[in-house]
Length: 194
Image (cartoon, rainbow, N blue to C red; front, side):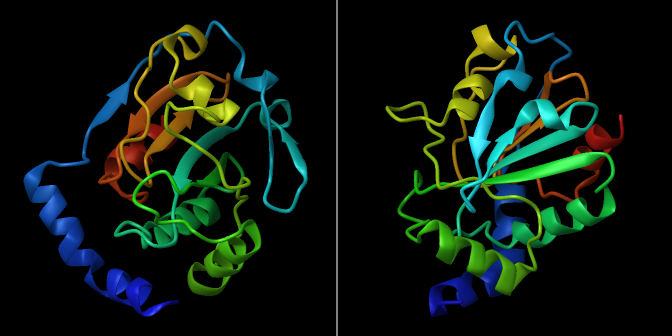
């Protein structure tokens, strides 16, 4: 970890408390609407250059998270790894490293993977570094997640790093959680266990 990353890791509990008190980044959206375009038609390239077809994930819930190595929320990798271990038979977590918010993910796919494994023990898949905001070059998965004409109801794009989208076992987007909702919080756990 860089000095900045160590400082962010150390102050995370205070940072989390302040955002919790302010109510910032704590929004959750939920829907039971069926997706007009199939999530399972999508595929991504993982950071190891392997293709992942989402059709291979049918009958599992999927949590998609835009991540960054140099963010106040980076410590959420711990909770994401805990979720991965706890629900490995029924939930797939995929991280989407992104440099969309304040130059907080400057590394290459290799350095990002090494950082996540070394500092947080991450074993869940990471996509290639992606654009997640609604701008030119937006990752096709995030195009689906943020277009109500494709997913059936949601047009909310990530407003910061570590926003979370939950897909159900039928390939429908059911929840959006802003960055302030931690991976191991009851609200997210309840959505996974529904």
